[in-house]
Image (cartoon, rainbow, N blue to C red):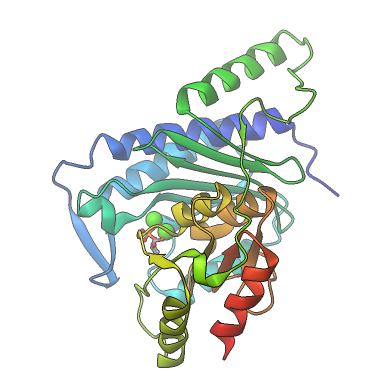
Length: 305
Ligand code: IPD
Ligand code: CA
Ligand code: CA
């Protein structure tokens, strides 16, 4: 059974939380911060990550005090703690999966390439995903079965305010005839040929990656048009959904890095799920996302050799 919570309310909570958290870290990108190492020099966290998570929790708890929240900063570092954490809650009736600041290394390095990623799942199925890039003022959003969209934080806020006001007055919540939301519809790229494809990947922050994976990655780089690695899994997925990147793969990610992005890519018409199987549940850690099935097949073949 689908969640019977009003969509406008879920969307408004997620949007407002993402915007306040993203604006919070954007304003601090050039300030000095306490940087703590988690599992390696490439896996770091700052006090701003926790502040952003607290902002998001505040928003969700104000409307949904009984929902289960899985925020990255509540989980001990390392892959096994993350796997345990998601396994413990993945079938909850109402679950929010939160990465308050995806791209912390970029944030520490003053590189303006970090986002907020928030997903809401009902009994293990991701229903809603929001990714907010505060530096480029882009909100990427999808609702299961209702498409994927892009807008500015201002437009998104106005929409939330209108929805909440209309609901309070008990008038009909704004319905849009040709589109679920009145924003730009996201569409993945139609690229099929790997030799023309602009691909993206991420390099393992937590170690433990075998050389077979590195070799497969090198084969892909040699075959592809070009490669990017911008240091935010969620931003990579948002850009796949927007058709800016043709394909993306990365190993050993956590649900909070990719749950929202996988839904946004799928709702933008793309393929997103586990490398090899294509399965798209909350337990996916090795992710592949592409605009087309042909490119997905080609990349899977190269990754699985
Ligand atoms: C990281 C980013 C990065 C990916 C790492 C993630 P964080 O998340 O998504 O692109 O390569 O594996 O841990 O720590 O910046 O939230
Ligand atoms: Ca992350
Ligand atoms: Ca993070």
